[in-house]
Image (cartoon, rainbow, N blue to C red; front, side, top):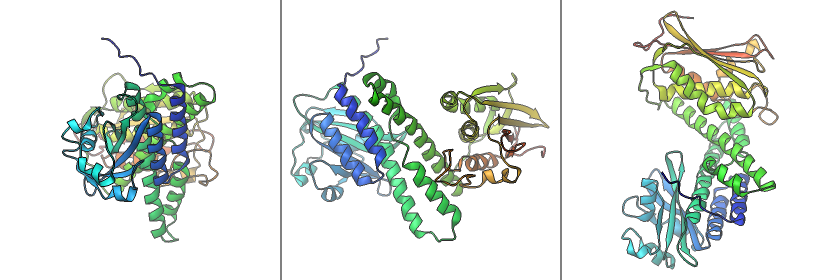
Length: 420
């Protein structure tokens, strides 16, 4: 199998991509983000214009959110259907479309050009996605001096991936700010959550991890250092967004479980694989104490694995660099007992139960050393208990490490056969 050559981008384009990542990280104002994005896209690809279309979930259609060549208010009033349009095809099928002559494609909406008094000739459009969820479409219009190249496609996809996360963050913060205005002064937990969320979401950066190695090869010196910071922040932001979404679904009882018989070793190994990179960065030694025979449980692996991801993540974050973490499982009293043990900062006896409370933090949000929103173990508890299991923490005290234990129903039943 022949590997296609990597697209070649100029050092200046690589620098602009890093600069754009920093710009996306510096503001949570949606309008500013969109303006910066379209102007950068037009400049990097040497195009006459660029535009962004976002998905309206309520109306199930796309709408123009920004364009370099038109009034955004006028554009936003132009609906773009998901069926029968170029942007709709890009969004629905999550694929790139490049056209040298848009008029030869029946999906081109010529009426849009007429309304904004602009002539579209060529187009390169890419989807803006967070994992498998569509956010919108980023388009580069009318390439100067020829057709769009593989390098253009690479750059626009990189910008789109960064933009998807940044836009989602800005929307989330806007919703949080709106909710904050509606809360009462006595709603302490929600107020603390908003303060934490605002603090956390200003630092992480929406940048595509998949482009990391390529950018590192293209940048040097201070720019390369910026790439490293961008990648670390992107991973952190993804974790925060997934946690917030999981908590919302749990609170609304919107999660559907599909239990089946599965080896608990499979779930534990899958959870650790998600966190392996972060554990390596912290120089932790991770040991697996798993028996060779399958320990079968009745659970939904797609819902139970995230619970253990949060538990392992908690152990990694609250253990100083170079620490030791053990992940284990055993059959006990007919049930399956699992644990994640660390030699980290430990927990005071009076706080053992509190660590599962929503948004609970030992430290004030503006002075604390450890990241996170304080909802990872809340999510883990909800996902475990929703599947008939139990979760609890044990710790000899501060500075003496912690063990998070999870007791799960054995195969063939949805309830525990023995109380601990």
